[in-house]
Length: 361
Image 1: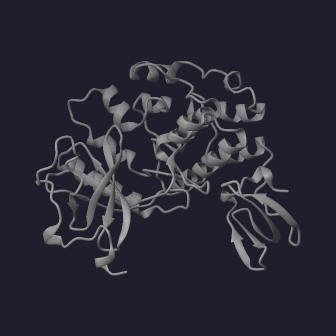
Image 2: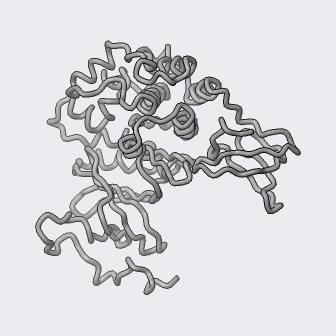
Image 3: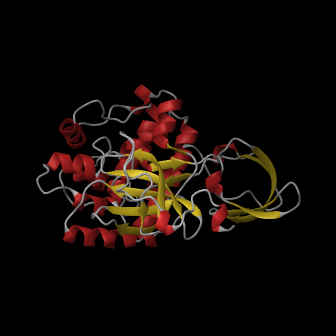
């Protein structure tokens, strides 16, 4: 495809700039060209520390997402941000949204370019559809935990796992945003910000912060396990275990109060699943699941899920995450990839992460 046919292509000397006059109320960054490459076409959303835009990558002729930080940090923080952004760009996983470029605008504002994913944030799904069934909640959580486990193996702790940072694509795949970047974002706070402001807006969401985060202590993989426990609780009950309070009150609740019984809010949740979630929410990291993998295995065991493929030669029906049922023949494989024969006789690799594994029959 030539650049002349792209709806977003424009000659570099004719590209809009941030200094052009715009109608009142219009986002001043829409139309900006970053690094002579990313043309910001529309704003997709805004969080506590950044805005996210759809952008046209004029070099590779594709649409991407660009996150622009609101703060303009000093030189030492910018260097730390660049180091953390390089770590994030080196991490790749099917259940993570890839970060592949970063830079600094002329006025010192930092930005990141990421894959543009179809679908909706999990926060929007929950807001529009309400609590999820146990099978669907575990289906989403296990994908989140797969990505976390891979990141932890590289020494990357997310530190801001929450529904707004999980994208749910139309076919059901869940993908986590902002890997490796929360550690960089916490240094972009203004020096005169108080602890609560920094913790609430930069280090993570007060709705999902682990006790050690609330205290400003070091974080490890078990910090993400706690946040995933909050996410599971929210998916199953329709609300986080602690909510409706000011930020400082939420932090105190995470530090001192046990979460309300999950099955009181969601009676249909199996007891084994509730136990797995509540262990993830233990105050002391030593009492939680020791890893994302351990929590994933506990969740699947609670629902009787087995990722091993059916024996070779067995014909079976499976429901895809998007709800479509397929009849297949197993050729064996591994828990990470099933080899199957499709209805047309062709052979393919089936990713069990895209299946509702409670429906295999």
